[in-house]
Length: 383
Image 1 (cartoon, rainbow, N blue to C red):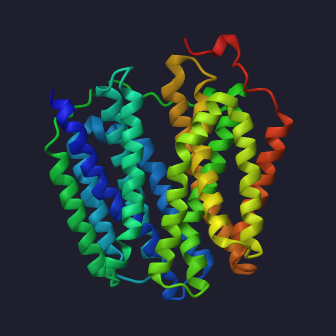
Image 2 (image 1 turned 90 degrees about the horizontal axis):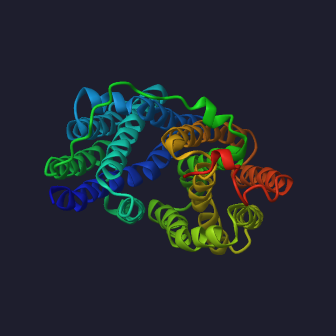
């Protein structure tokens, strides 16, 4: 009964964190553009955030065992607030890399805490529904963060103080919950067998590609529109359209994947993404192109996750989830820096040229491996 009341309180706390994170992820590139940072530097600042995600994911279980779920979450929110305020200390490239790194760690730890609370307290019958509500809340907070961005102060210090207020509300709500996660006697992090597992390889590649695409969008798309002359509100509106397209496409895309096969849907999505990139490169029907881009990019990850998990035994799903999260984070870490460097040397449209190249690679891979997702090998099927 306590956990039934704790779940909506937990999601309310998540909502405050996600609003702050969504607004900050868009505002950081805009601040850097105004202060004449190069696109290469903007990409590296974005990559430092995802490096923090990677480190936070690896060490989150240790933090939870050392403290507990609620206090680990609380300390993460405090780090988030301090690091955001820290951005105002100096408009220096190395300082911003460090502060964004700490924000990345804090965010990853909060996600692990929330997902662990849901997985531990949910049952086989309710866990899927709880995770669906969790993801819906996360995307809703992301959209709200973009919509409210125009009401956030533009000064870095005042923005940080508003973020600190949101973190304070998140802490207040998490302390009202009754979650207590069991401590692990031994941390298991054996993901190498998952990475080399042949049947799940396409799913893992899909996770890497999704990380590359989404990480680059968050890090570089605001800078792209800012260079085109759009103001902050207009940039936020484009981001809202992109994310909402992904939210709306979630259910239809996953339903089609279950009905027609994950490989068919991923192939169709990759072709649509390629068309969207071509449209954006040549400035054809920009609104429609962004809708197609959001609807395809945001649905590659969950479908790839389902593919990879369907190819391993039930007892290996946790290790596979770790492998997927790490590969996704590595894609988010590397791609923004590389793409931003090339954009700096060429022009801004290379953002979509790079997406087109990635989609062409995925199309070729899916066509080459056609028919392999019909049934996983019997020895690796989930019981």
